[in-house]
Amino acid sequence: MGRGALRNTCGDASAMTYVVTEGCIKCKFTDCVDVCPVDCFREGPNFLVIDPDECIDCTLCVAECPADAIFAEDDVPADQQDFIELNAELARAWKPIIESKDPLADADDWVKVKDKRGLLER
Image (tube, rainbow, N blue to C red; front, side, top):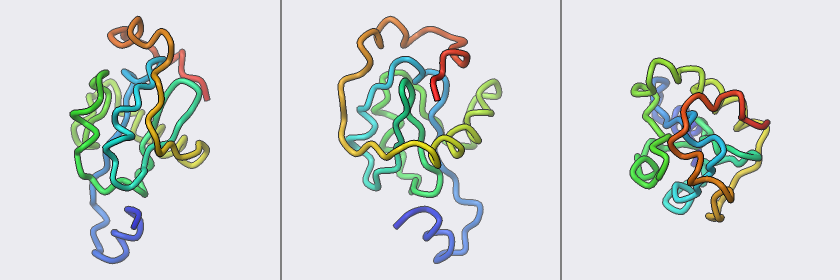
């Protein structure tokens, strides 16, 4: 059951989702995908996003992210707030990823790099 269905059933329109932020760009580690019980991750060329309509707020992905790029919606850093809408937008366009894959070849070189927004490939 996706988050949208949960909202309709429970009437909880304020349910929080999790958000992938800038740290994932050019890394695309997929450890998070393995632990997601509802397959809410979507895959782009060099970034993953979480579909807010599918996320059930289980928190499992947060600890699995080697890039520390996943936050609860309410905890997204101030300079990363635009990623809340970006996840929702790209989740509508990108296909689900349901199995882990190898990270991008140079992910370890990019994992701690800041200011990668301009490198996001759509």
